[in-house]
Amino acid sequence: MAKTKKNGSPELVETWTLAPAGTLGSSVRAKGILLEIRARLPSSTRKLLDVSGRVLTLAMPESSESEFRHASAVIAKSLEGIESLPVIPREIEDILTISTTERRRWLEDGRLPSAGTRTVKLRGRARQITFHIFEPRMVEDLLDRGAVEEWREEDTAAAAENRRRAAYKAKLTRSLKKDCKATEASQDVTEEASAKLRGWEEFGRDGLLR
Image 1: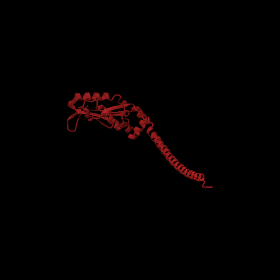
Image 2: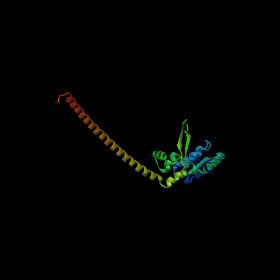
Image 3: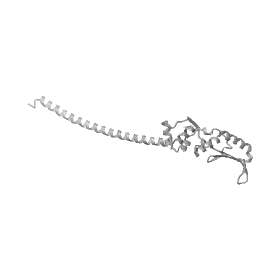
Image 4: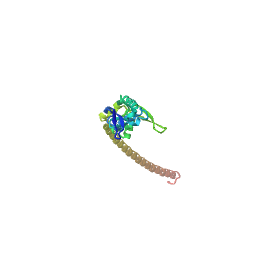
């Protein structure tokens, strides 16, 4: 569809509305979908695709009709099954409203199942990074049943129990140290008494007690 820009030059515009099942209510996820689709476009047209809310918009000069049609076809094809696009760390944190610390803890203890890992090369850098990805329907299920609040309650209870155990262990350690010192003091008294007794025995053997 062609329309005229404010400066008077005509342009070609097409829009696509992302389904809620695709964005999972997250603007970060919508941005991730945008970047995923941009990566499939020719470098010359990538920045001509943008997102606002859940709406993707492609705008190109009317003189680029051939490139516009090609880009439009690529975008439409890329959106097929976009609901199955794996969820990356920053997206799941936004969708579930969790912190990076919580994500890592729940991933480590198995409550947050990983769908595998993905390795990408940082733009303009030589090094690569590897991170876990997550299955969208699993994330949606966690969101629907309020699993995050349950996990936070479990973590709070576990932290309280750990503090109780730590306090008991510290108390037990202090008690053992106290008993140990008392035992050592008792041994010192016993050894001193034994030394005195040996002294009397030697005194007796020398006939000094007769």
